[in-house]
Image 1 (spheres, rainbow, N blue to C red):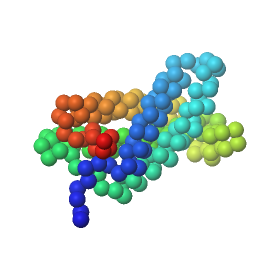
Image 2 (cartoon, rainbow, N blue to C red):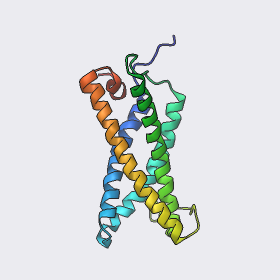
Image 3 (cartoon, rainbow, N blue to C red):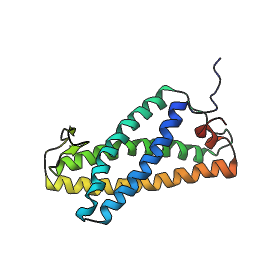
Image 4 (cartoon, one colour):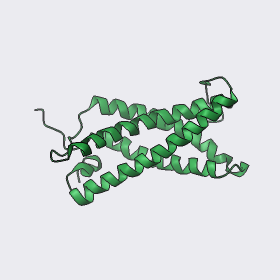
Length: 178
């Protein structure tokens, strides 16, 4: 029996909502870090680094689950441009969830700082220390973080549109059965 799934598999749903919380936390932590250069906010950096690596690992797992399972289809009556936008925005989200942590890791490496996940767990440097590379990567990381924030907002708006206005099952497919 090869039925079209009505819901995403439970692991995909669990990863989606876990990562939603982590990404929102990361965006607020990042905003707090750039809003102040005070050493009083250094604890945010100590949260930001391991959280970024956790997001990277979960994004890899999430991508594997996505590629290894069948997803519910978009509604048949959804306009082609909307369907294309939905697919493109999902791949953009996956790309940003993978790229931003790697970019952050490379940026910290280019700063000559260690990427510490805990007091004893240190990641290897991705790049040699170089101030100009650090500056470029920092700028790119910031711009891509804004793009992620914007993409998350559009994703949330689309989910609410499907759940509250169209009531077409798209939001329910990620929430799961009652």
